[in-house]
Amino acid sequence: MSLVRRATAEDAEEVLRLRQVMIDSVFSGKSAKGDTDWHAESLPTLRARLAGPDDGFAAFVVEHPERPGALAAMVAGTVDYRIGRSGNPHGLVGQVFSVATDPDARRRGYARACMEELLAWLRERGAGHVLLNASPDAEPLYASLGFTRDSDPSMRLLL
Image (cartoon, rainbow, N blue to C red; front, side, top):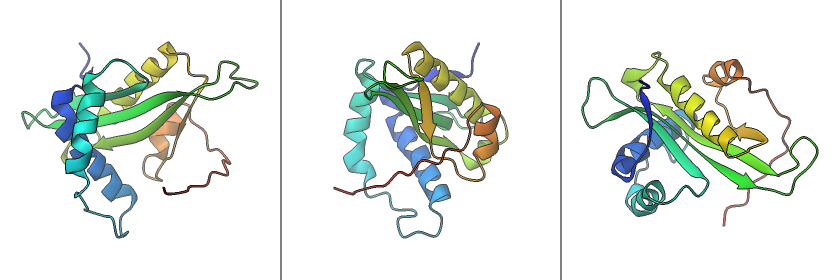
């Protein structure tokens, strides 16, 4: 039996907690580190998405073996439509945007197991490729799963 399961609405607070672990890790030293004020506003939306129909969003989790009610790891991602192109004529693209393991549960394969479930879910939905941003610490995991560095010239506009 797999340790990994699809996250439910009841997992929303723990999913947010682990997302904050990831944010704090990736953006260490930045002003937003440790800022959890947004959690209260985000929680109802996340609960609804986790409880709702399979609409292109999924999170997969592993329960913490030493702390009942806590999660040890989680991944979240989406499958989105973009106009097709060579190599992806149907235009379905997976996006992994949150991978986190509780600091006291690392080096046990939980993130890998969650990623494998998310990748299987994305394949089932016909994603032609999967995008993610990798921290230097996480890059070996993603490389072992077949990800390669991209020269993506992405830009961002905050609205």
